[in-house]
Length: 615
Ligand code: AGP
Image (cartoon, rainbow, N blue to C red; front, top):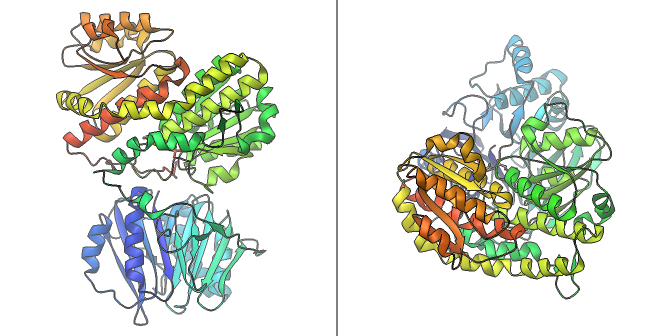
């Protein structure tokens, strides 16, 4: 997954590109590069490392260009190094390209190009594409736009590309399929910003066009923006107004985006509920799925497909939909679902959960389900994302941009949407009583404030993190609604602090993992009051009997577990089905502080990217 930017206009291009790349570094940061037409010459600077390394590499040499492209990379083909960094140049050196995505048939194309005498310098699939485009331009004697169109008709895979041409400094050409690309339109309508998402554009313009799959855009200083698809059909640009504010993108005074986003959860959950939870009317309204409500009410089965944290949100969804709406649910890892030849039919409803809306496995899973006739509903955070646009209906989580690679506020927003969906369907089905429905709405409405209360134990959690920051392993235990939270807590710890951690159903300890318990093993247990509280207390006693260290999340005033555990973190009581929204927050904070104390890069953990748009 990579970040791409482009600019054509009247202002110096270098500052626009370098700042844009910095805003996109969460998409990948193992190398970076830019190409600018400076004093009539196409200049290329690229290197391994981060955007800051690129700035040092450029070292002030780019001052006067007005058109350029830039790229920050997450390697898919070829290791992170200078030569594999983007942009890549054609044989003549007159065409440079940046690319986010993957060209699946690049090996065949590479062989054909080499046979035709092309000299390739890198191991990347992207370089193949720009050589192919120039090859077609020369052989077919067509202009660059037509050569791009013809080339893309022969490409299999995903792409968001921008091409700069040394002979046409007043033009950039972009194209998109499966990877995101947005075009910002400047004030004068002869100024254009191109990027993987809206964050680099928001400080310059609010008017954007999201390219659709297989569309090619030309931005030209004189003729403006024109779009056609790869079948050569003209398309009318649909200009939308951006709602993201610039300050939202800053860290807001926190040390890391992740801590900011953990602390944003009262607001992001409130934003997710706004306009959907009507307490006075005693109703739930999810406008994005209203045409499918009856289909959901009568669903024989619902399948959640997702990856990572979003998969764990789907597990919470399983408990919610089965317990409240009495609908059979299956939760599938998208990467497994898409290849196991699943039995899917027109009566199935597949719900895709994805913060970025660009996760390749999730995208492919719903494409498969769609092809088999299932109804596809999306729960995404990024408006206009590929998954959002592929589904029949859906609900945005409205959590705002989540920059930290470790998902936090998106998870609680996903669970909030799933809770609204399950309660609304259950009420329409009559599988819960009116009184339980209304009581649940009142309790759900109190969750943002209760999350605020949970955030107040921040200092205590930091102290606990300091005690266990050097652990080599950790176990997370939960039961019922909090079993998925145990899995999510373990994922948070491992992905940002690099400590090996496992989430388990508390009762499963007896079937093997208890052999791991010793005085070195911290065991985080969600032990809030609810259906399985007494059982969890027994599980805690089993751990203590083997000298394990127990850190328990409990409700205010619980003296029983306080007696047993080595540390307790108190949170407000709530309905069983809403405990995930509260109990995950201490685990997010815990993983954050452990990672900081271990000197890890919290917002950009090693080997990870915010959105995995490749298989
Ligand atoms: C979660 O903290 C991770 N960053 C990762 O597991 C993530 O949830 C997963 O890649 C799915 O991403 P998505 O929600 O954007 O589809």
